[in-house]
Image (cartoon, rainbow, N blue to C red; front, top):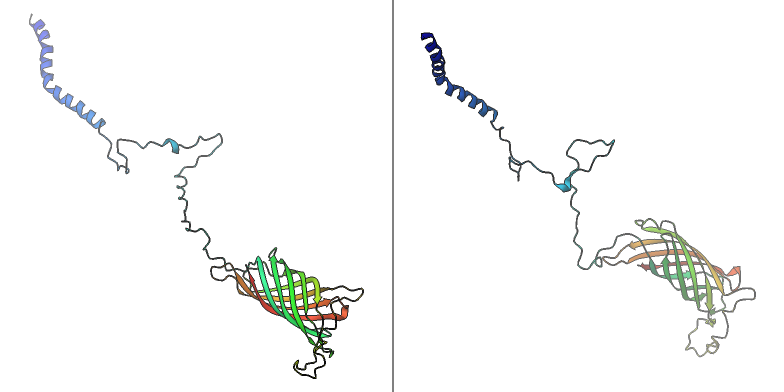
Length: 285
């Protein structure tokens, strides 16, 4: 009887003995859970982002799909392209912009003083040309010349002259826009106009003994000899000194031109060849 009571009481006694240890066991289990659930150490949040939110990639910045056999390189990739440079436009466009300080003529107007030796008379006067630069080394011109003569053969007859023709130029260094000396060669062709010769013995017109008062214009001239023409040929070599390639804000330049030419007058044959020296100014645009 006693043994049965002890057996029935023993589990109850063991339970009562373990009852004080239960809070300690539960405390240890709770402590383990707290260590496992401890949050990770705080990290510095990027500007504009919170630590709780992860940066999401913008759909527009999504990398393109990688094809087969492609190699993906690691790294930040190229930086953003700089913004385009926007320069303010002048109020009046380029109308007042200063042109380049370079020798680059397109159309020029030339005026030269000339002296031309001749077997019978020496001529002097002015020549004018309108020059058209078709390329940097080649140009064309329309030429005109007017002048008079000085008696060389002692017959006391003088006459005026005029010419009109065309010329072709070759500029040796026309492509060098910074060069200030521009040598050239020129070949010209045109026609003479010769006025009637005037008699002048050097005496005064007021002299009553001057027998040539009424006979000043009786010698005709300007008619070519049979087999010849009233044309001329001209071969010249010259040099141009660029005084100013561009004048301030004006697209205009100025040059000093020197030239020596051989002129063949076809009125009377080869014997009427002469040397012509010219110098003057050219204004070009």
